[in-house]
Length: 302
Image (cartoon, rainbow, N blue to C red; front, side):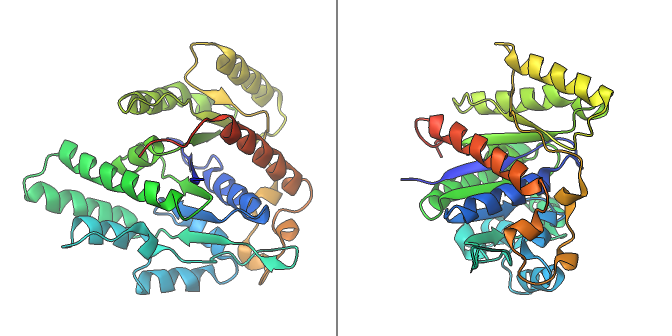
């Protein structure tokens, strides 16, 4: 059976995208699924959170050994030959343990040089006469092909997308079985929600796809304002014309969901990384995601 691809995306930063990606990936790995995280955000926060205590050193190794998304772009679009994304995978990247065993969680890390690599790609290819549409088409086709191949090697692939919509993000979303949009239920964070989900829907329709993105309420503080906004989001999702759905799970505003890997020390257990009620909340989200994937008839097309 082919694996499934999940993308975590939002036009806005600081909404819990990385925490959602990593906690969900670790939940799948803990259940025995061979799991891969593809970090497409130049901040590399997902990479550091997965690497754990020695994250800085291990990210340096990924840069030095050319096993990262930036070098994937350079080799495929600025080099003379194609290099499959599996070449850039760091196997068994997580330092977290569960039931006495390390999680089977691999990573294609991002680096701070990712944005520069994207700019280089655009500059050099436009100099060669490619239009932006042609560049986006090349990047999109290559990413979709690689995602299709990754499905054959992993049970679950989770992509941490950068804020906004880029050629890489658009291609990743169109190759996804499930698109999760973490959103803080407040006025500023929801302001562009309809526009962002509308952009996603429009992009998917171009490829004959119809799956709606699913909003994940995050950093909920229980205030009257956020409670009202959350209820409005649920009412909006219930509208048959809505361009998004919504999870029942709500991620609370707690420090448990922003654990410092350095403070955790080496080889923490899953319960130590997500203490208190955090792990129970992660498991609730995992169950919802599993149910949504199971309800789908087949993986998204390449």
